[in-house]
Length: 347
Ligand code: PMV
Image 1 (cartoon, rainbow, N blue to C red):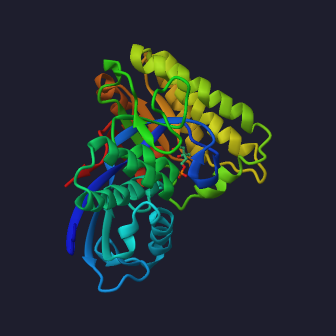
Image 2 (image 1 turned 180 degrees about the vertical axis):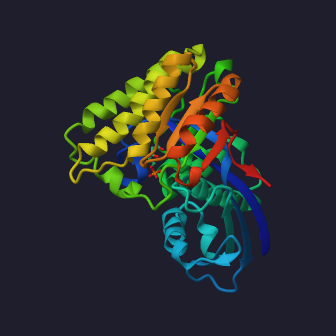
């Protein structure tokens, strides 16, 4: 196949982990399995145009962020090229123009690495498919997830499916450390269109990059017990996602979030990534849940923002609660309403 030029546009979503990935080995191999809900609105949209070069040289690309040249993102992309060229040999044959934007505000404290790396991976897989048109959908998704993982670990959970598992686990047939797979069982209707409202408590740069964060698990005094716990929590969640038990879901999800932060507090150097408003919000959620018996819970990433998870049928009550009681704890009163999505999409 000789292909001279062309372009693709894909959107790829962010995802929110229920069992957290925290700690990794060489080559972006996770220290424990994780599972996430794919999001629907928080997305990166990336167009890649490619033009065959006269002579094979080194990598050559331009990077546009929201239509403007963006030099400071280039090293991340270059790293992606370097890590993936072994699997995408055509990367040196073309000049690429990568034009990317996010549907969520740039400085929102929402990491764009998962959606951004996933969007790159699916675009490059589309180019590979031009060269190798016989590939199956399954091969496409797996390899896209494999490539996304090399960009940013959790990005491998942003390719395909509503609930995605990444990492080997005795109860996940086909589960792999190398790529994410769609949760293998039918999910209970309680989780249909599950909602995630993201409260932007701190929109600043991350205090601890995830590279540094994962590294803190090396030699961490509680690391091995934590990794065992993640395996157990994934087993339990596997049952819960099928039987729809929301009380048990809440227990696992909140415990995972707090454990992630506990690991950071107990590492050397140690970090507190929550802000006072994060704790205010958590306490309000607990009080609201106790008073109303509505199945709303929180989870956290490696930062101060709070993800509020709840079933669609209580949206009206929960949004009212958020507006009345929680907006005041958000920076500039900002929050983002999202819900479970399907994964990356060719546009
Ligand atoms: O993909 P990374 O290396 O940015 O790690 C993300 C880790 C957490 O968001 C804290 C947890 C997770 O599983 O997504």
